Amino acid sequence: MQKYSARLFATYLSKKHPLKLRPTNKLITKGHFIMHQATIAQPADRQAWLGLLTVLGLVALVAMDGSVLYLAMPRITSSLMPSADQALWILDIYGFVVGSLLVAFGNIGDRYGRLKLVMVGAMIFGGASVGAALSTTPESLIAFRALMGLGGATLLPSGLAIVSNLFPDPKQRAQAIGIFAATFAGGFAVGPLIGGMLLNNFTWGSVFLINVPVVLIFMLSAPYLLREVHAESTGRIDVPSLALSFIGILLFTYSLKTAAAYGISTSQLVSGVIGVIGLFWFVSRQRHLKHPLLDVSLFKDRIFTIAILTGLLSLVVWSATGYLVGIYIQSVLGFDVFTTAMLTVPGALVLTATCIWTSKIVERIGKKWALVATHFLISGGMLLLLMTDTSYGAVFFVASTIIAGVGYGLSFSLVAEIAVSAVPSERAGAAAAIAETSNEIGNALGISVLGSLAALWFRLSGPDIAGTLNETLDTSGLAAETIAQAQQAFLTGMHLAIAVAGLLTFAVGLLAIYWLPKTLPE
Image (cartoon, rainbow, N blue to C red; front, side, top):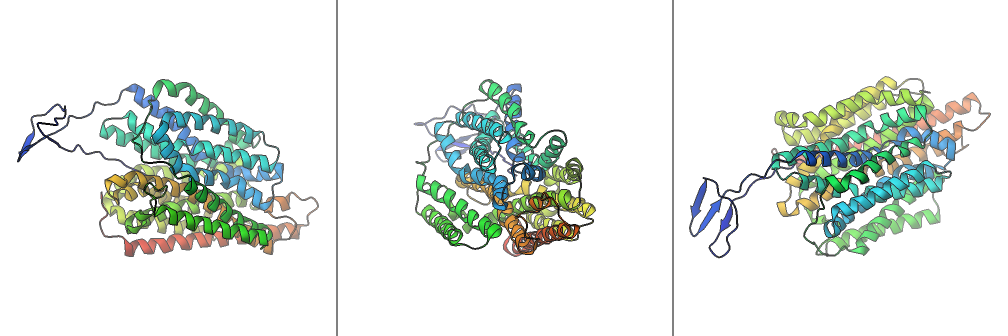
């Protein structure tokens, strides 16, 4: 993720416009100007570190909610009986709402105050978590998940700005932001584990109720530990752009889901066409706005483009495999939810360790080859998952998470840093926002696109009793042959989705070799 380094620039002073800086012994003169070295900012106090800890709780929740439902979906499916497309919406509506609103809420926070926005977002997030836990229908759960996304979209960009403001010292700020990034990555990694532990002892609603105490602690402590953060205005938010991006993404995804679950229809095609038109219109509009929501001109830089593709694809693969393999281990291999959660521990440990040691890896092989390795390691992990069968596969799953976990860790640690360093300093904020958005959109796209591909295969080759494997297995009086057919159809669909994911990451890895220069900018 993003690693910030701050450099103290010498400031030119004139007699008419002197700056009140305390000079050091080092003074350089040139012509009629005098350059003074600014004094080093004071280290942060204990309150700043407590403030960081307060924000990290919310960051972990936002990240966990991207993965915590993977293990809970069999229970939710059995309890609420959602259709195939409703099950996918339950999983990814959260990510799409967050991804669609990250840039907009970043701008709103700049104008009206980051802390105010986070406080409002935390209240929405906590209240929607309670509503999700108490949902009795698929529709209500989808609605509350969308509200959780609305609250979650305020937390990441504003939380990062608040943390940066707590630490005026550049070295401490870099440490704090590194901890922020590692917490976000760790939240993704431990989400399935925590979800499994909760589901082993409580109902599926517990994976949402765990959010409430963290939100309450934040609401009580934030006014005392955190400071308000404003930024210089960058123009009005373009509401049509916000609407086009949000509607375009949702309608296009809805079209994919409906086609996978029920086949081609007129309404499905119309939704898809409108979604594609909306997205093209959105991109075209950004090119002519003085203050665009998405600075598409940044993609002219090959380094930036590869970095964003890496962030997007790593989350596409992460979310798709987490969702599909979670169902496979429980509903095909027959493991209970706690055992399934424990199988994720080795991969989570490897991912966390990689995040910590990424700087050492980069020192050895350089940023370019670390980024290339990201794709090849993830692709190798997907190859191992293709060896799973209806009777065995746990060992291949664990080995896959270990190998791919190194790739995920490199991606989480490098993408934003490389994206920001590839663009001029005055555009670093826009680059960071796109990097964050690519992660959230990738998390949702993995489930919607690759999950829909697996669902389509199941519909075409399964026993035609229900739209999902868990719905089929919950049907009473099934013959052993029917169960075996359903499980095999799901496994083949999972293999198809995973193969596509592996090929995509491998292809981008090859593209990175040829596109990226030998040395990437610092």
